[in-house]
Length: 108
Image 1: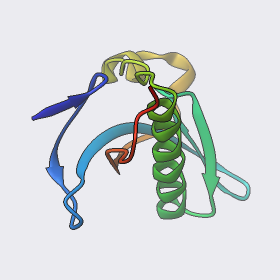
Image 2: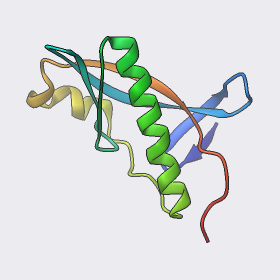
Image 3: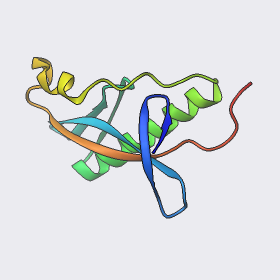
Image 4: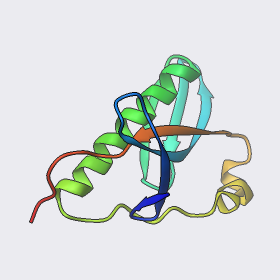
């Protein structure tokens, strides 16, 4: 099991990249689903759950690449129970998305 920041990952995708798992929260709207990745302060949307999860994965990957290129660590993941116990999130659907570890150079 490897670590990047405080994210644990261990499985590889078909291209051999290490995969990381992130918690997301989905909320149904009039036009589809709004989605948040609370540990990274990311918000995006999709017309359905699968599209919202894909959009979240892409936003998370881009966010992690930006941290990596800036030579910074991504924020630490908070415990899932903290989010589940938050009354503001009571009516949201929780799910996980897998994101490939950012590849490429790290800024010096």
